Image 1 (cartoon, rainbow, N blue to C red):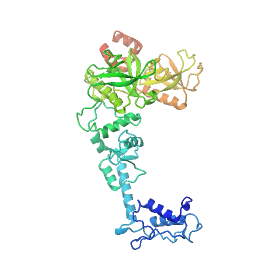
Image 2 (cartoon, rainbow, N blue to C red):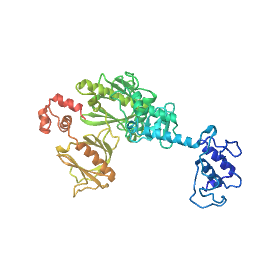
Image 3 (cartoon, rainbow, N blue to C red):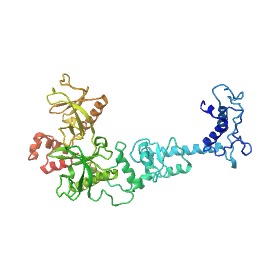
Image 4 (cartoon, rainbow, N blue to C red):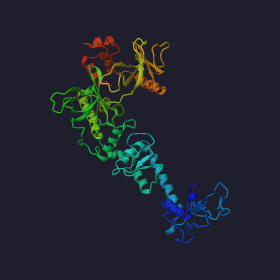
Amino acid sequence: MGQVSSFSSSSLTAWVHFSLQPLHPCLHSAGSSAPSGLHTLSITHTASPTFAFFLCLRALFGSLVLPWGNPAGWPAGAEGAGSCCPPGPALPCPGGQHLDVMAGGQERSMKALKEVWRRAENSFCADCGKPDPDWASSTLGVFICLSCSGIHRNIPSISKVKSLKMDHWDDAQVQFLAKHGNAVTKATYEAHIPIYYYQPTYNDCQVLREQWIRAKYERKEFMEPGKQLPYSDGVKEGILWKRGRDNGQFLPRKFLLSEREGCLKYFTKQDAKEPKINVKIDVINATFQPVKIGNPNGLQITYLKDNKTRNIFVYHESGKEVVDWFNAIRSVQFHYLKVAFPIASDNEIKNRLTRNFLKEGYMEKTGPKQREAFKKRWFTLDHRRLMYFKDPLDAFAKGEVFVGSRENGYSVQKGLPSGTQGNFSWHYGLTIVTPDREYLFTCETETDQMDWIAAFSSVINQAMTPQEYASKCLDVVSFPSCHSASAYCPNVPPLSFTTVEAYFKFKS
């Protein structure tokens, strides 16, 4: 109230009319004509500005009792219920409408909005699946989270977003939401999504979520069956900026993806006839890494070379282009595996396409003797393959560890074995126990420690599949037949060499 008292009566009158007009369009200024019985918002020179403000609120909302006594400059009794501005009914409006009717309409609209909001279909963000969305698009009819609403706001010609908690929704907008909602809108804009297309969640990076939203609502890529899409041709060729393995510089390189040849190639020069690499599509993984690469459109392509992991880091200035490359890789993988595994269902093959790493980050490690000094290394857990690097952007891992299942003698334990030697600067340890040895690590914070333990536990608690047994055997020994494989992995079911090889190609 201290700020209000600094206004003059005339300026306060103008402010009240400007502020309250959206709530009550029938407010009249002092001296204007008013319907019979209307309390005009007249402020006299004898009233203090603070009291004038109080009168305005009383006139608009009815009875208003102040918890304090009679301030200086106020008429006697003004602080009570029986002051000079009686409670009475709400202000009448021209045409017989009343403010209480308007308030009742607002209340009904809000109640109707909450009913639509409570529908099960609207309890998750329509675009990323995050629970409890509290924003909505008044032009698309979908309920979305705060993060996705920011993306919608960048395409104002398509979507107008409003807060479900803070913004006013009129009857027509509420009715539009009720008529549409997430289920109806999804049935329209997501009617024909290719099975290989990656649909991001709220855990995914900005570029994936933005291009997913733009693909649906702006480009309308999924509304028609059989629509030609830039990632569905089976061939994609173009320039990506690739990080040099040795010098760390990003330089433009020509990439070629071919479903017919079942491979991904890149060339150091645009007119080069021979590729620098030629990677079979079934051993490729791709995952977005904007933070690690230092570019919002950064993509990490990983493949197996001599059964060891090789990393390629690329980006493109266009978010759409780099996401198209990502989905083109998934498309070629899907169709290649459909031919290689004709009896597998579409969903089984979909689950074998590109995947995100379970966890990445720095830990300290020691050597096999467990007496060496602990060294800081970057670790990546890619399902059952734990890799470590000297630098996050290294092309090759310094070492890899297979993480099996609990039933095969693998476990993760909090802390380090008693009597552990070696210098370490981080004090939140964990131990990976395998049938062969124990691996000791330390983390910088307790949160990091618990996150790594949870990630390892999620892998160890899963039973190993036959292809993972095969992968383990191929990791530890090069064998000429399945019989020698069984010597190292006795739990592997009888398999032909071709089957083992196929399992490895199709492994999780």
